[in-house]
Image (cartoon, rainbow, N blue to C red; front, side):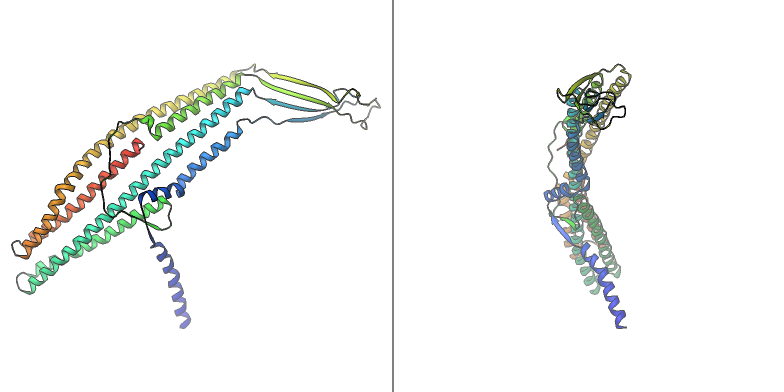
Length: 412
């Protein structure tokens, strides 16, 4: 029996350890979250590795063909060039390597621009998740404050019922409201945990990240003229066009000739003499000459096809850029319209709605405690008050998400 108890304790400890590990939280500011995401997010790390790969490939610009080393022997002659060690090298025309280097350099710049797009998207996602977590914490705070108000209402209804001033139905209604609010609190806690876990995944943290901000505030925004070419997406598209231009230049180098150089050094294997000929070396020197060749392209069909394909590739990139520019402009106008509507809604709930909610809560409790209004009227007041406070938090969150969408589109 004792052994069974020990095993149960060990299993319980093994189960409770990961639970305690997962429950660890860490408060972080927005800037810390962004910094950590840039350093640890797998998507950002992959983008940085792609840039490093493109930089490494720049070293392949001067990719010269292999050097050929050959030995030739003529058993019917002595120290002639037919008995020599030859060294041959073929190279493309220098303009090809220059164009290739420019192309690889342009590809590296395009990868940097793509990494900037990934980083901007990641930062916006982190901001959105961060303020979403702040919004969920604000909703939970509102419900917890409402719980204390409902507790006062239940205690007051209980006293009035015990004093015979009201019926039991009023007390039951007060208890129902408090229980329903507690269930709303549990749901809000789950939504807050979900938002925090999403933020933790984006920043690459093994701990649950909790925003340092405790109050939901609207984000500042100053409207500026939209210019797609200055956004990270526009800069990346421009760099892709530059890469396509360089690819066309590389393809056109197929029309230029290639070069070759061969050096021969005397090497006679005198012991190998199957025909009993004079295999003596030439005493004048070992250098037996050189050979320079030029490869002239006589057939241009394949080269023309390559140039044409590269030009079509450039046209495709330009069309993709134009399509994306139109799409981003439409998204900007749509986001601007949503943000203006969210700003009007936020302004109302932040000013008039907030003041009305506080007045309704205070005045309703006072009038109910003095018996001036019924419990049904007071319940309606409480429901409207909490609804206004939650709608205010939702309005601020909607406005902030719209601001973040505008920042993403404008590249801010």
